[in-house]
Image (cartoon, rainbow, N blue to C red; front, side, top):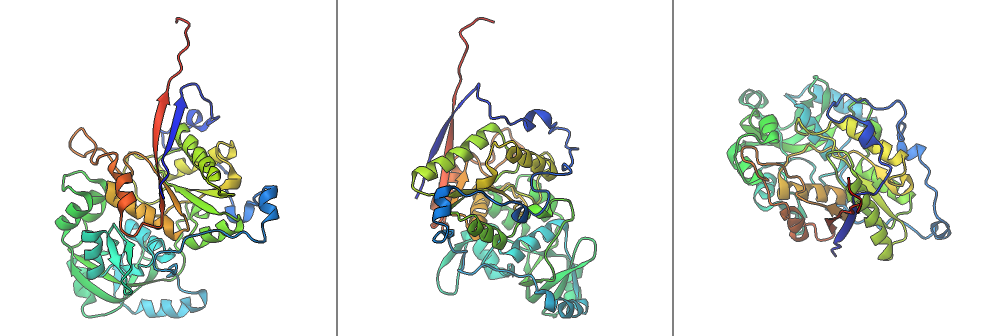
Length: 416
C-alpha cells in the first residue's frame, strides 16, 4: 500500500512556529529549557484526552501494531536480579573497549531496534547485510538489514582475546557495559565495506572518517548481553524510549495506525504541514486514531548538523505551541548513528520503525543523503530513497508514504 501526499504551501501562511525566529540555530549554544513539555517521563506525565468516539470503543480498541522482524522483539538487557552475577563473570574476561559510536550501536541492538539481530554481526550476517541488504532467517523468511552493525578491534585486542569465546565490553570511560558471547573474529575489509555501503570511496564521508578509517582491521561478532539500560545523562534520556516502551504507549493511546517521521534537523513549517496532512489522510482512509511517532535521530551526526539538544528544544516548543497535537504525537529519540548513506541507509531507518510498531513511514526528498563530499552535486539521486523503500526486500509490510511539496506563491498586486 502506498500513499502519495502532495502539499501546496502558500508563502503567506502562519503556523505559529515561533521557535524558528527565537532560536539562533547557527549558534548551537542553546541548552534544554528547565521545563520542556516532556521534562519528566513523558509516558507518565502525559495523559491523552480521548475523543468521545474513541472512549466509547475503548474496551475493544488495541493498537494494530505490526509484528517486529522475526516475530519477537529482542531485549538484550540483563534482568536486574542477574546483574551482579554477570558483572562478576565479565570482570574476569578479556576486555574490548568501545568508542562512543560503538556504544550507540550497543544501545540500538540491546533494545531491539535491529531485531532479530542479537548482537554484533558475525561474518555470515555481515556478508548478507553488505551484499544483499537483508538477512535470511532459519525458517527461510527475509528481514531487511541494510547496514552492517559490526564491532571493530585492532591487532593488539585480537591477540589479547586469543582463543577466548567470550569478551567483556567496556564503555568509552572504562565502565563495564556488557558481554559478547560465542564470538567470531574475521577480517575487516574497509574498502569493500565503504564501497558497498556508500557506493563510493570518495574522501570526506563523515561516518567513514569518524568510524571506519581509524578502526581496527578485524571485526568481532557475537551474542550481546547488556548489564543495564544504556543512559547518557545528558538531560535527554527521558526522550529515549525503547521499541517496547513505544509499543506499550501506542496501546495506551489506543492507536489504530502509527506513522513515523524522522528528522536530523529542526522541524520547519513544511514538515509540520506534511505531518498534519498525513494524519488527515489516514483519517480519510478510515483510521480512527492514527498516532504520529516524531522520531529525530539521536546518534552520531556530522559536525554541521544541528546538535541534538537544540533540536529537542525546538521539537518541544512545536508541541507546546500546538503546531503538532501532543495528544496524537509521541516525540522520542532514535538512538542510531547516522551514516549519510542514502537509499542504503533509509532502509535501516524504515526497518527500525517496524520494530517500534509503525506501519506507515513518511519519506521525503533525498532521505539519509548529503552533498557529494568532493563535488558540487548530491551524492545520491534525490528520488531514489523513496523508490528503493517501495521495492526493498523485508519491508513489504510497511506502508511507505512518499511526499512531494508543491509551492504556490501568492503575490500582492500593489507596487512596492
